[in-house]
Length: 262
Ligand SMILES: Cc1cc2nc3c(=O)[nH]c(=O)nc-3n(C[C@H](O)[C@H](O)[C@H](O)COP(=O)(O)OP(=O)(O)OC[C@H]3O[C@@H](n4cnc5c(N)ncnc54)[C@H](O)[C@@H]3O)c2cc1C
Image (cartoon, rainbow, N blue to C red):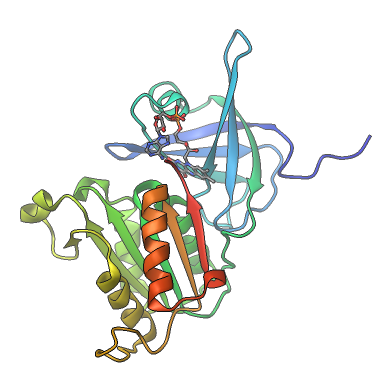
């Protein structure tokens, strides 16, 4: 009988902690019996089986660093009436066992040692795989230029806030540009946030912080571009960001995307 490739085999993981990161996102730490080192950006499939045998599965990105691969962290957003995300939010607790398969995915991955400028763009829970990229680069002591444009609804939805702000303080190569979409939140903001939606201008500002090159103001095109961009979030968000990046002049093969939902 042939061996099943690592990543394609289902195994039982134990939930070792559950933590509320925001009103809609919980972080789940899972301990894996059989570990296959993941690459930053990869995901796991989760399979739930009801007592009557009904099964359903969904994918969740690893948000933890590649350094800690015997235990992985998943950041799961509660989707209203969502079958699997509500099960995780309402039922799953520390000590539970969950069926998982992974790590999966090849294109949407970033090596912790990648040394060229990288632009990361996340919408909401789309920060999960990007957080793995940021944490893995940090753990590899790689301070190469990295800019994160992070869009979320309200200030309370600013996931991994203190860790990201710490990164800015300790890593000169890391630039954080958080963008809040619900502008009503503006009054109580703490100063590092901007408001509205990520658009061509905010992407250009991120590129300037990354490459230190303003380009030609007349043309609106930067002189130097990031070597790669990674975009993750809902489909509409990913499509809009991809179009901006193409329009700014990035090549299709340098834009890597992951879509979470409709
Ligand atoms: C490669 C990959 C990685 C992923 N990583 C993550 C992750 O790290 N964290 C995470 O929270 N999710 C992630 N997702 C999304 C996740 O797999 C589920 O789709 C999501 O949790 C919804 O599943 P559900 O069973 O709760 O909802 P479902 O029962 O499948 O759907 C309920 C309703 O919600 C809508 N819906 C489904 N997904 C979304 C969404 N993301 N946003 C808004 N509406 C939605 C559906 O159209 C449907 O109407 C990832 C998806 C992929 C493909």
